[in-house]
Length: 210
Image (cartoon, rainbow, N blue to C red; front, side):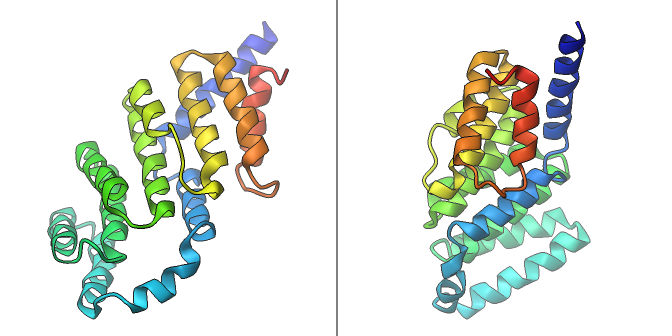
């Protein structure tokens, strides 16, 4: 009975974790991993892009800070339309997705994330968008959709995060055995010093690490 209570508490913590998505360590971790798995060429890539697109992108931070979602949407859609092939466009879409979620507009966030997945030239950004999209789908209890989104990662550096996210989906779907195996795969793929390793270990321990 004690273990059952502990397990319920751990599952409740995982649910709470996803409820706070966008303000939790997951977002910070995604930012770190995007930087780790493909951001190295960012400076060189930016230099080859249109100066005007760069100016437009720089203005987005001001709109995010002002929480002016209406103007942010207009600016992002304009950038995507005029400079869809630039490095700025998918990053702008990710900014809008995050802001939209913060404003409670999941539909807009989903649309932006799907655009990044289908349009970005950078595998790391596509994987980051998949993880964020799966988190939204999980929050909506669309478990099968989330698993489909997480079916495969492109960048090796994202493998551990994908397995962890799959484990969370499977756990909340009720498939504890599959969740356990996914968490084990996550630990095998994550760097030993990754900030979420301990969290995965806690989730695995709650399910019985056998």
